[in-house]
Length: 200
Image (cartoon, rainbow, N blue to C red; front, top):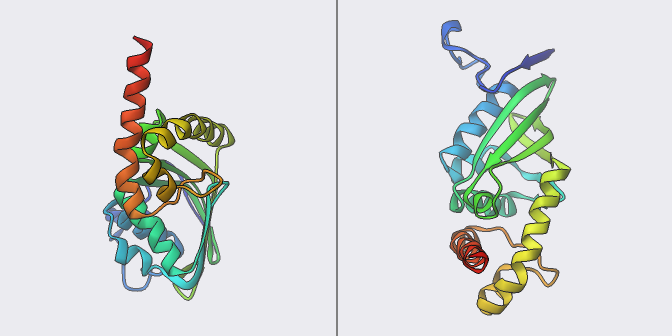
């Protein structure tokens, strides 16, 4: 059966219809709503519990996480940078939900970006758990993120060589986990402040 959910507020079981019941708690749209709520409350343990042991979480062009340990690292990073997600225009068909998604967090803000948008965002469920989560970032936003990160890296390497070696891969890609998330935002803000001072 195909179900749709338009608009920007993810609530497949409105209060006037009696809210969720035990019967529909595992319905895919309801699970997406639950996932959004848990992520935005930074309830990492409960969020990870929504995924199968061998689940995959991919932000296309950014990272590809496999298994609960890697997925936990991703959500610990989200907690550290104060991420907030919103799923909208969701349509479920069988065990698959197709949405659009937007994300705001402190790292994006420190890079000078208000939000990131992903289309499509696809969640595949199996036995009530998320088996696969795949979201494709808007190419223009991805280019802007990459450009700003490349501009930041030489300054980062010069001023914070130890942190640079710990927080990035040899290719210069950011290693997303809770510890690095807590460190990177103040460093990015310092970098942006240095740019503003040099423009004065």
